[in-house]
Length: 417
Length: 122
Image (cartoon, rainbow over all chains, first blue to last red; front, side, top):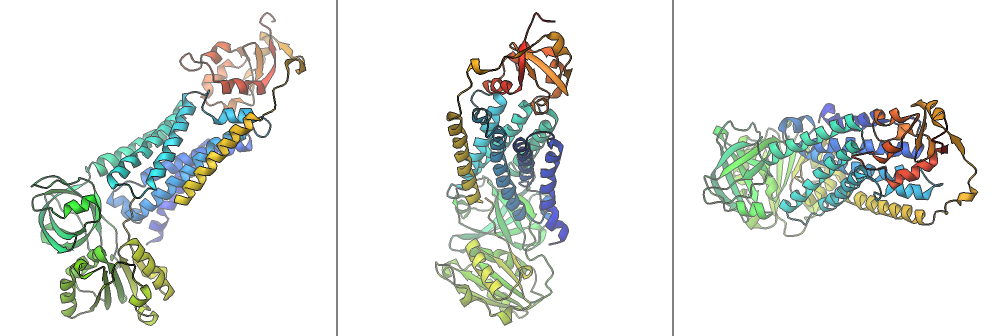
């Protein structure tokens, strides 16, 4: 990743935090109260940065180093803002300590205070509840996403708290930006205004609980290359009732006429329903995102795919043969889960630089030491991994132990919650 | 991040509880008799302190020096500054849509009290 893209998000977050703090920097006040004011404004700046980093625009994701990176920073800035906003009322109250403990408590509690203070507390409690639910991964995605919206309401209430305190200009600015970011996300991304219209052209079963779906553009096709992923919402039509939510899928093939193919495994309610999709179902697609396999191959490569993680490598192989000697290690649970194996073996048998090792690993996490080539074979190789986070984590650590540096390790996991 | 969330939230409520408990064990206020005799000021005294940097106000019979507090007041400066050097009880009692300041604000007043206000004194 270029230094500019690498620094883009940290610099943006720094500017969003330092700007309001500089504007509101207290003068002549006590230390605790000054720090309380600074923590409040820094928290506001981080909240705005967090909202901006949840926008799903391909051009923005490209400039900021990828959608997955944006979401990672969205989480980091959100939790940092939360901690600073917890500190804010405590420090304001601490100004009266140790001399006047009653005044300190009166400063902290909303009871007996006006609506501005109540709004601040309401915002903080909503943030608290919303974040607690955000960490609850067992919730169904649809419910989880609905509850996550509560965090947006908490942000708006927080800025209304500023407005009611009489801090007019910056509060209006912050409130305006928050509404723009939230509106942008809901209207363009969640509602699908930024999405491209496609229709299901064909669907075929490629393994147990896994189908490959071909999607035909109804307007201008997406600009997409192998290794990228798209966000797709399957709608209702042609005897199929889609869940209408946008989920990420890596393309498994790109055909003439802008047709794209997606391998979809039944991992949740929505993807299980898609297993029965047929031709004619309308689809909305956003993207394309990511640059996995995007760099020109200048060195021998190791590709490791786990289950549905085979799709970016398959798309790449379907487009052209590898330019460099490439070992594809394809892992799946059982032979019934081995999608596209015959096709991949046929490509490897056709000569060229590709060699393939396909392996059923069973239910447990495979032993990395038994799977990976030795350090001498790995020397100088670029390693690309795609699969479940636990598998990618285990294999990445094993590759590091074999002397592969971080610069030569490339992976994407689609942990968007 | 999950650990940071839960630990910071726990610590927050622990400190809120400590603030509340601390207020219960605060020393009782001084008896009225123990307070030294206050100085008395009139309207002319107030009028000599009518700038944001030197701001006195009379509220509910007391005189308060808000010079050091003004930068901390949450409203816009143009809301409070015109009341410097004046009797401001009505403004204090009808802050927002006719509603008075909070008990918290009443408690804060004591910190800035410098004397009594004599209505009939020039």
